[in-house]
Length: 392
Image (cartoon, rainbow, N blue to C red; front, side):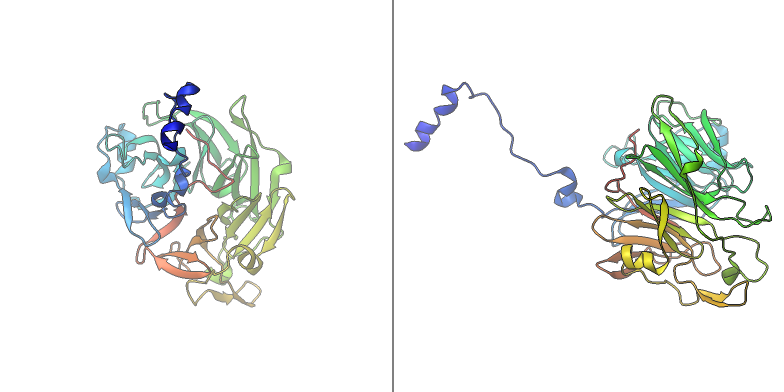
């Protein structure tokens, strides 16, 4: 009887047609979408391979040039099918529906829409690297307004970041429209968009890392403020931060080797205004609000990356002063921190340029995935909390 009586209440208040949906959990917290399960990795080879996989290495999506069925301009077609083995960069983009990459002789953006086969694996932007400007390009990063920053990763004073209009509405062309050149930072290996600060940050060296300037090259981080009105980046000296010392890398490569220690990956700390940066010798932490480097080497791993292990036992030698050095953190080509405390990293073999597995650390315990693959970078395939990427 009580149930029948209460059933009249909506009629009394005219709510009989009102539907009140049940509260649903956030999409990213649903069991099937637990955060920080997906990793994107690039495999070197001819042709190279991009793959998205879980923490066990199980592949859920892959991309290779064999998947490209769309018609490409002749220059892009030639660069896609070159003998370049590069899979140097891979980035989460466009709210997880795109992958930005350095792939073969291209810098490209490719769709990741496995639930929609008609659009999946379509290239929406591409730039040929088979030229004097981009042959060594190491990284890309999305900017607001459907823009894409591509670093030339060169050693000359005019090497720089070039910004392109990467809108998927634009037709693919051998000469995509350039929006801006930002010069002055050499050997750029890492970039990250800072939504809170409205800046693009890049990691490189202040002089030629290959020694061709005949002066020491310091690892350098630069912030480029973005103007929402003009859609352009600016360069201001106050956002240039150098490591306190410049180091040669003779410990690894032998006496007389001309290169200086350069920066490799620029990684935000989840939910903090801090970066970690890797260089040829080890790790450094940078506090944006303080505007300075705060920790170095083992102090970084002790604070932010507990469970880090050197992946080989041969990372030592005599430096240019004849002193014996151990460099357990050297040559981290990529690393990524997740908000749950887990992290991944790729450490190249000693006196080599790439690694042959991805290290995954969970609760302070390291294990290997992607064993046997020739890898430069693995990254979490997701937005880092506190560091969202702009949406195209």
